[in-house]
Amino acid sequence: MHACNHTVDFRPLARIRIVVSARKYTHTLARLLARIVHGQQIAFKNLLRRNEKAEEEAGREPHPSSIVQLPFVLVNADRRAVINCQMADDRCDPRLPFIPAPF
Image 1 (cartoon, one colour):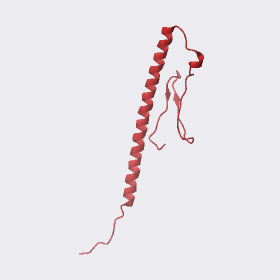
Image 2 (cartoon, rainbow, N blue to C red):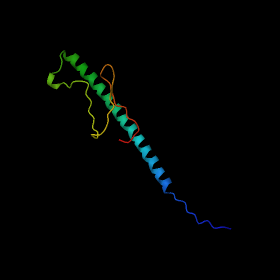
Image 3 (cartoon, rainbow, N blue to C red):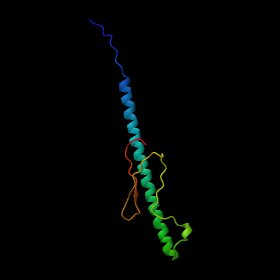
Image 4 (cartoon, one colour):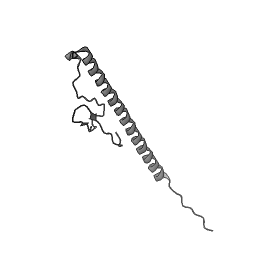
C-alpha cells in the first residue's frame, strides 16, 4: 500500500465561502433597504393625503413659509455614490431602485 503525502489546501474554498456569504449579506441588506424606502414612501403619501384633507377642511392653503416644495429627495450616501432616481410622470412618486451590489 502506498501512503499519500499530499495535503489539500482548503484556503481557496474558505475564500469562496466568504465571498458567497458577503454577497448574500449584501443582497439581504439591499432588500431590507428597499423595504424601508417603500415604507417611507407609503408614509409620505399618507401624509400628503392627510395634509390635502386638512387644507380642504380649513378652506385655505398653509402659510408659504411652512411649505416644502415637491418633489424633494433626501439621500445620505458616500460622496462617490451614484444615485439612480426615477420620477413618475405626476412627479409625486420618486423611485430609487436598489441593486444587490456593495454600497
